[in-house]
Amino acid sequence: MAILRKSITSKIENVMGREAPLPVAEAQTSGVEAAVLFPQPAIVEPQPATMEPQQAPMDSLPILEAPTVRPMDQEKMGYVSPSYTISRSVALNPQVLAANRCVGYHHDSHELEFYKVLRTQILQRTNGGGNTVMVTSALPGEGKTLTAINLAFTFAKEFKQTALLVDCDLRQQRIHKVLGFPSEKGVADYLLNDCPIQELFVWPGVEKLTVISGGKTVKESSELLGSPGMGSLVADMKNRYPDRYVFFDVPPLLTSADALAFAPFVDHILVTVQAGQTSLQDVDKALRLLPGEKVLGLVMNRQESALTPPGKT
Image 1 (cartoon, one colour):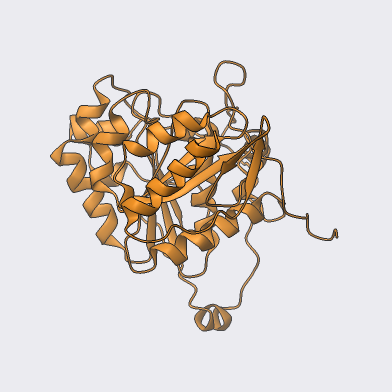
Image 2 (cartoon, one colour; image 1 turned 90 degrees about the vertical axis):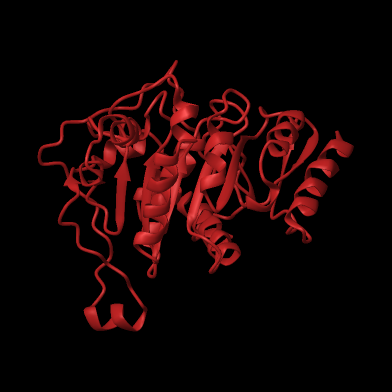
């Protein structure tokens, strides 16, 4: 196992053409150390078989407000805040988000600090080198959807960035269900039914964040994700706003060809794995399928926190 761990790290070093960053943290998995490249969010993605994401009525739901910042201070700090005049507006229920472990929505969540560290590392490693990120996993149930959601929330909090979250798991379309709002149009509707692009965007009441999720589900998803139309759509999302990071939730690597078909269109890739569950063999197999120069690293879910909660020593 130690040899396999070394081979995984060496593979990342070799394909990126430079020395890979040292692991920030290591998780004990059944007595075997598993190398990771980022601090780990201590969260669990809801499992469809045992816990269906909670839904909520959309009328008069409370919205958690961001801290007030004076306009003159916003200008000093380079704060970017677009107006949403085309996107369909929905309200999110904080209780539903908390139940579904969307910790990036709340400003007082301890787990949010992990995502802030992860955000900072992504910004530093991608500075000037691309703004589209594919979030995938080796196998189902490893937390990729929740990782993409919480990253999008966290990037929307950053002063100089906005975020777009796109559901490209065309066989399931789970992002809007986890967030708790109904949606009848998504990427497949745009590609197959000529749905106007402006009808896909949803503003969930969170400043600097828009979402595309919902609508038609399809079985021939790899063909759609690798199509010229999909490539053109990603290019438009990438180039329309220079301050925007786009996160794509894509199916697992070892269960379909979807992620492989979609990978050429994005700048960067994050691979989510589950502590104590994903084997090093599966991680190694998944990484070998990807263009190594695009792999930012691994995000490990369900790992015991190594950070001290605020206010404790």
